[in-house]
Image 1 (tube, one colour):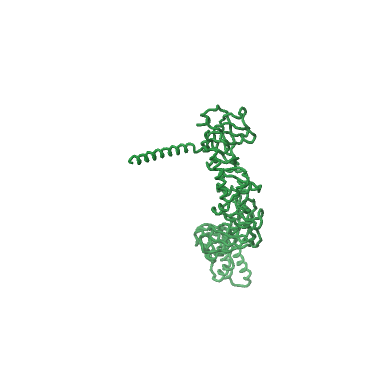
Image 2: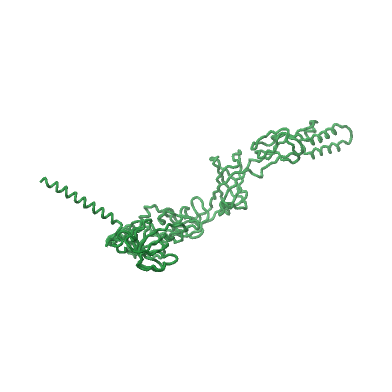
Length: 528
């Protein structure tokens, strides 16, 4: 009885060693498939297709790898690209290769949302950015009225705030002194007929640059006013300061420039395609980050007739009231324009529109899980909705989210071009090299039974390639062993770059090449 446990232990060790040997052998041949394996994969794919709601009693057009669009197989098997079972594509009778079918369960799992195309009363709010500037129509320039000297300057820095009537500087004007002394001398004279002389002296003071107020001061005080106080005529900010103590001035010399602050200009940059919606006199609402709680209302004063070639924007001049002088030049502002009119237009959610750079595309849901891309012409955009001017009809259903189901790379901008077969932008593609046997040569394809291609992670298989652009080189015939170079084409297939005949040998075709039959299209080789 003691021998029984020992016998069971030995049997367990033998079974474990045999299982490990079988596992090792299976791992070595994991890349190979027997015909029975191929049939089982096909059945499994059909079962999965039936689970997803697809109709399995329809004719299978071809097999393909969803992760590598553009390359098809005529028989089931494992994908040479991703090492996954190929997926059947059925003939649904639609005849439109742009349509894509997605089962309801997959739509639910991936959160596909749709929305209806509707007609609404459209008054889009145009948003733009801008910067605050001085109102160039509210400016005062203070100049010297006569030749003289600057004796005092009260305002000594640019951007100092001033109010109307404030003394900015004092000037000593010799011409004024002479005109005043002449006037006071005639006024002190006594006699008849002096009124004409007195009026002439008063006129000479006016010609020297004195105003009636200054002349009245000289006449009432009876003293010479040798110094002229220069005052500001408006409230504002000193933006230019040219007066300095001791400098000599002549008539017309600019001393100060004062900009008013009761109102300011806001220069907003509006996109070129939206500039036509902005009208002079339209209402505007502006907000600045520096004053988040404040809102400023104004109107469009002008749409400047020029387009910035760098930003493709049009400058819109807006006039804003500036209570409390809170807005200062240079402030950044966000602007919203409110067009005057309202129109009935067709709209879709903005997130439903795919911008490819050259066109705008919307994915339309036709029912029964079928989707098709449609080119549209869009208009304005406002509050999460985009105007559709051409391409859709009222009541159609469009995809709002989940468009990544149409593009395996989740690249929304390229989804429509892949579905419609539009050529992608040319890019540098790598070249891959291998060796194989020529099985057939036609104008459309060169079929090669090739060995593994490590750069593509391909195993040994038989597949067709596009012939070289210059044609198959002379001297290469069916049955020859060749060294070839391939690269990916824009439609997802592979084209031959070069072919060179070589001597067929086991080293050429890789390990096991001599005892392998040429594998079928889309299948990995199996041991004879």
